[in-house]
Amino acid sequence: MRAEAIGIIGGTGWLGAGLARAMLDRGLITGDRLVLSNRSGSHPLAERGAQLLADNQVLVDISDIVILSVRPEQFTALNIDASGKLVISLMAGVTSQAIGAATGASTVIRAMPNAAIEIRQSFTPWHCANELAATEIQCIQRLLECVGTASRVSTEDAIDYLSALSGTGPAFAALLMTALTRQAVKAGISEDIARQAAKGVVVSASQLLARHDPQAMINSLVAYKGVTAAALQSLIDAGFEDQMGRALQAGAAVARGGM
Image 1 (cartoon, rainbow, N blue to C red):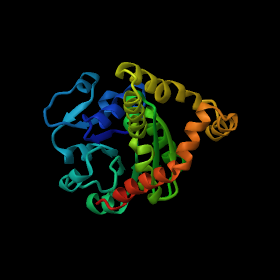
Image 2 (cartoon, rainbow, N blue to C red; image 1 turned 90 degrees about the vertical axis):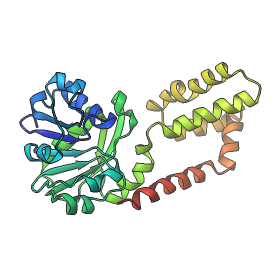
Image 3 (tube, one colour; image 1 turned 180 degrees about the vertical axis):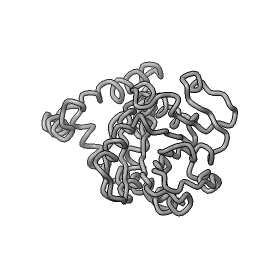
Image 4 (cartoon, rainbow, N blue to C red; image 1 turned 90 degrees about the horizontal axis):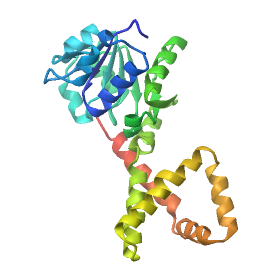
């Protein structure tokens, strides 16, 4: 891995730069083997030895692995020839077939990290239709695990679905925290106390799930028939799980209907 040059198109954006910093911090690559596309010609990563280039094709030419960290709508304008290269796409909704056809890449990996890359707690599913050697799988895993955990999934459709699940990062948690805060304010709780209480639920107490089975926790709380049970049962009766299913399918439909 360290012997290979890695180029990141979009490498100074929040996602690309987060991955670049993690690779450097973990010693997965040295600065002189890291190439980032950047139009301004300046970025803090340059101080760590990374090379900044304005020309995406030059970046591709000198890289062994090319990471695409751009918005899906920007992909068609890239116009790069990555023939014979391993390309890792972090874009939602752009299929492996479309990436291969447009770039000539020999191997295309689709991966979907999320905003938790910032704190290196992202779960990143990835897919490749090609047969991969054990060393290639290890290389991809190590790269993606720089920013959290990663797992290979068997189908590209799974990547599209997970774009709406894990790919949303803190979005669902943020929505829950906002809803709890607003409802508490409507009930007469001061906004600062409401926000603290909601944060205690979503950010603090939810950390228990790292050590407990969630369904077992729900079952035990419902069986207790107390305050928590009443609140949970109300959500269950209102079709909370079905509503979450519809939300995920709506997001997945956008991903599947991409490029």
